[in-house]
Length: 454
Ligand code: SAH
Image (cartoon, rainbow, N blue to C red):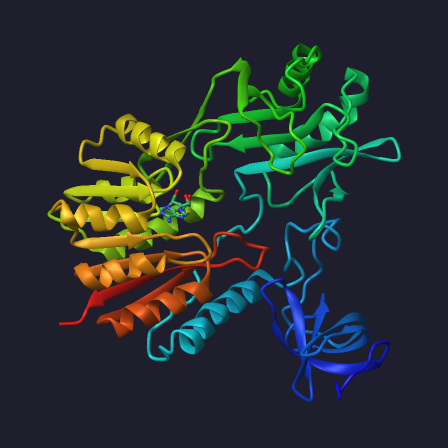
């Protein structure tokens, strides 16, 4: 028998927060997930749904409020899926993220003695995103634009987004107001009708350069000149305006064809002293200010003297590799997406680095081959996707035994799982530094430093 039934009303104490930002209360050990409730609060809830081992309830009233509760400043916080924890003060967010990393390291990694430092957060945790991908659509004949609601393709219509740039706000609301006047129809996902699908705005934080990409269904775009003129009037600092054509019935944003409508083909940015060229479709870190903190930490843990060879597995466009190349003898980067490797090579050249090598392919195959060819490393850096390191890559590390491993992670659970495997194979985790790359959301990055035990 479940301790609660659908439509029950009860008062509960909220003890935790999930990765989606929902409060968790336990009734005789049975977890109830409550959207909008915060840890430390007594709340009255209405049970919506009960499954075998957990249920969902709606928040009706807060009987005792968390001292960390704040009023979410965003007008569409309740519907938009972009942020999950604006109702938690930034201090509370950092404490939550620190606990999340610490719990994973203790419970999953079984490493209760490893120091996990307080999260490095931002001085101003707003307006940090350098890229906005804004879907356009219609609602009862009215043009809407904003971000998707959580787990849906409905657009939460808004004129401001407090985690994107002011320029993205100006372009989003300006285009929304003038679309009808220009004779451009927003795209409709269900019917595949209309022309304008997404507007993507990117800004180089260090350079101020701004790129606006209009993703259209058809290449034929008779209103493009007028659109260019208007966008430049909304934000005179724009340096390039691009059209990308995506004729497919898909929720993938970009299509294969890209044309420059006005200005430069790329924008430039810098992380630390390293320059990057960014085109409409290239991958680039979303929060460069904190990327500098995260990769600065990776560099510190790598403790390079100038004599070391470093392997950067999962290197993307080589952000970490180029950061390390400033201090290492040689850096070898491997990444599965060939386009990203092209970007990495171009960026190495742009910065005048001659001590790097990049190869496209699965890290778990390329790195064992490098070792066979005598290309070995003193320090191995990994920055895998959310699912963590490939098992075969971990086995390669344990076989080749580089003296130092620096693990950059965007998912504390898989970080902890992989640290356990490396510990069992003879490595010792010295410390872990969490870094907040995505304020107002539940995501948290962390860097771990491991040494081979002798
Ligand atoms: N360090 C990079 C980003 C890492 S994100 C940067 O700063 O830009 C993780 C990367 O791992 C992604 O670019 C993804 O394409 C890549 N990837 C995923 N599976 C991989 C695999 N098996 N081998 C190599 N790279 C992989």
